Length: 368
Image (cartoon, rainbow, N blue to C red; front, side):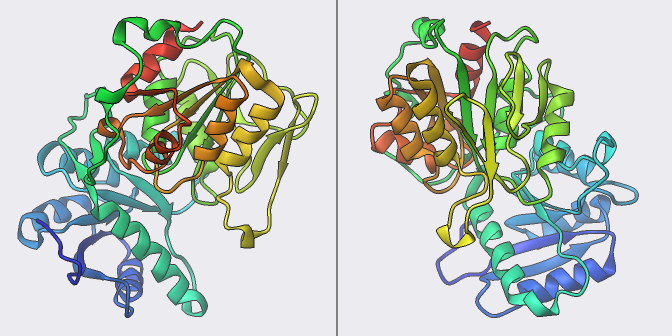
C-alpha cells in the first residue's frame, strides 16, 4: 500500500497494557504527527488476526505479552506478511536473555526505542514527535519475508532509489580477502537504523581468536546499550562489552561506548569517554567523532566500516580514515535497511569499497 504526502501513516499498536495502548494512542493523535492508529491488540495472537483487515503500514510492539509475545509475533509477521516493526520496550534486568528486546531485531524488527512511561503530561509533544519521526522513517522501509531459521543478508532495504549500488563496488569478489592488510591494528564499525542486525550478522561469524580489537559506534536509544551488548555477546564467539575509561583495547574483543557517551582515544590509544553539549546536535555516540579519533591515532593501521543508517553521521569520519591511509568500506544499498550514511560516504569519496553485508562479514572472517 502506497502513501501520498498528505496521508497519515497507518499504525497498529500491540501491548498487553491498556494504559500503554491508551497513552500511545493519545500521543500519536496529537496534531502534526502524520500518524493514524488504525487499531490496537493486547498480544501477538490478536494482532495477527487484525492485520489483514487493518492493513497497517507500521507495527509498534512490546516484547513481554501473554499467549504470543513480541518475539513469536515478529517471527510470524516476517514469515507471512512482512511489515516494518518498531519495538517499544522498557529497560530490563541486564543479563536476563529471555527479556532482551534485541532478539526481535534478529527476528526481523527494524528498530527499538524506549516505551513512554509514567506521567508524561509534561513532555507529551516531545515524545509524540520522536515516536512519530521513527514511525515515518520505518514506513519508508521495504521488508521481505524472513523465516525464523534464516541467516541470509538483511531482510530489508530502503525503498528510495540511488545512483550508488552494489554493482559499483570497486573490488571484485575474488579479491575481497586481500582488502584488510595484515598491518591492521583496529577495526571500527559505525551503524544506525538496522545496525544491530547488521552487526550481529558480521560479528557472529568471527572466530574467537580474531587478531585485532573491534570498536562499534551504534546509534541506540539511551538505556539500551547494555542490552545490545548482552545480546551480541551471546551470539558472538568474541567477547563483547562496554569499553572502560582509560583502558587499551585488546585483540579478540568487541567494544561499545558507554551508554549515551562519545568514545575517542588519547595519544597513547587509551579510551576516553565524554558527553558533549546536546546543542551540538551530535548523536551519542557520534560515529564521526570516533572515526576521526581513530584516523588521528591509528592512521594507516585502521579499517573503517560504515553500515546501514539514516543521516550522515560517520561519512566525514570515514573520509578522514581514508585520508590517513586506512581502509574504508561501506555497506551497499541492497543490503541496507536504510541507505543513508553509506550513501553520503560514497558520494563524498570516503568509501574505497562498497560491498554487501555478507561480503563484509566474509572479509573480516578471513582476517584472523
